[in-house]
Image (cartoon, rainbow over all chains, first blue to last red; front, top):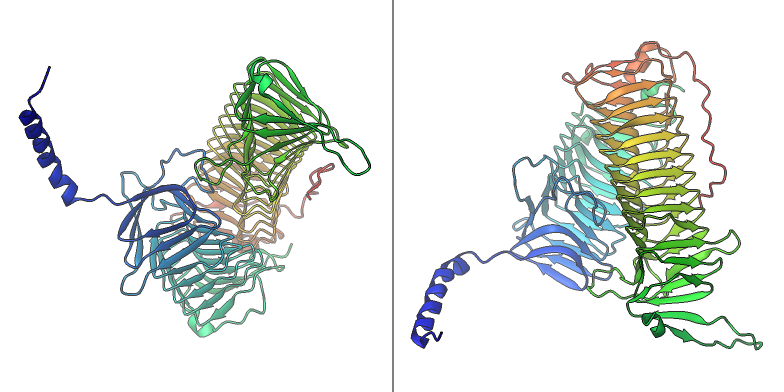
Length: 267
Length: 372
């Protein structure tokens, strides 16, 4: 059957008019999921629809003011592709989060019913050289920023209601400057030969330790406000210098750990 | 058979002195073995090589199987591999192991896919093998396999399987991104070393029996089971971030050394577990963290842990009688336990009848384990 040209034109025009408002009114945010090589730039609003891996040699730049909408993984995810069963941003290349005080980068959860308080894995820097995270707002992550053999600059971030704020392990030596780490389980953990430099951070209101340091790590603690945590400083090293005047108002300001045993109990 | 005709023999490499090397079997592109095949020597797999159902691939001691890197979708993972619907018998010897490795001059993790088994019901066996630089060193679906005295290293995952029955005996999983991962499987781990990964053992919906294993220096969890059953006896789980982490699981944990982990020796979450006669010492945050779980904590040696010996973060009580806490003095024991006394709303811990001294702890029998 032949359809007259004029009718086809009218039909197409009608379809176009129907679709046009939706297309113009709500341009969809770009979605990211999977492994990426090369250079990627996120700006405006982007959606982390699943795990994102930046491969070795790759680079992810997140511009000021970007909103990263994190889609939580299904609770039944049982074969995680990378390190976590929750949605994760895993960096084996380079990460440059370029937030500013005026235009921070925000990681926000895409809500759904039944979502747990800790609802994504956070950012892991796994042997990721030359990275920096500045003025990012991260919340509800298992570990907001985990450094594994990585020494990024972490500056001016707000890490709130995460299970752990920052973990430095496996000889990580990040510069941790002027961050707020609040209302999580623990603040900063230094494990396995890590030597972060901590200056002007506020570590407040965590349910367990503000800063935990194992026997092999040696952070440089420089005027950090540590308050309203269950234990302000939990330290294996016995000679770690810190300014006691800014470690106040915790249920217990200092717990010295080590051979004297759990809470002073001798074996 | 016709496809086998495509097999090219790359002859023959002269070496100084006039000796001749063995020819290299070269499988170019995707091919299928449709009759029983024996490999003995150098094999280059430059594609996906399928072992058809009913066919046995028999690999002789000293053989070396190399895989070229082909990453068609740019995800950093090579896809060339062995895909077995039949049976693989890779029986090397201690002096002549069989090597599965990358063909690249600068090999890296994920250069090739896996020794991959799909619906392979007869028992597949890898003995005295070295499997390295793969995505999943060993991978199985709906299969039965036995891995013995083999080394899995520098893979993204040392081994992964689903809906399978796997026995792993005296194998070492070293320096993989993740060690051993499985679901819906029945797994036996005997005298296995899993070290220097992010995750050591991770599984869901599985039954695990582990004895005499060494799980150490893994950066996330040493052993993590979710919705699974565990029988763990005489293992050493040490130097991990968390030692043993059970979620919605049940089992018996006895005679293990769960010490010197960065966080907790044992973390129980919504689980039902008998924790008996273990050594839980020198863990960074707590020997035991107990969250809404049931079971017994008895005759353990719980000493020298960092912040607490035992944390009860749930709202039910814990029966923790008859343990050695490093002291029998009630006030010192109470100070080493955090429970509802310290944080109203949490359950209490019954730590009465504390032992007067440590019971002799028998170090796990790890003979034959070579951590390096």
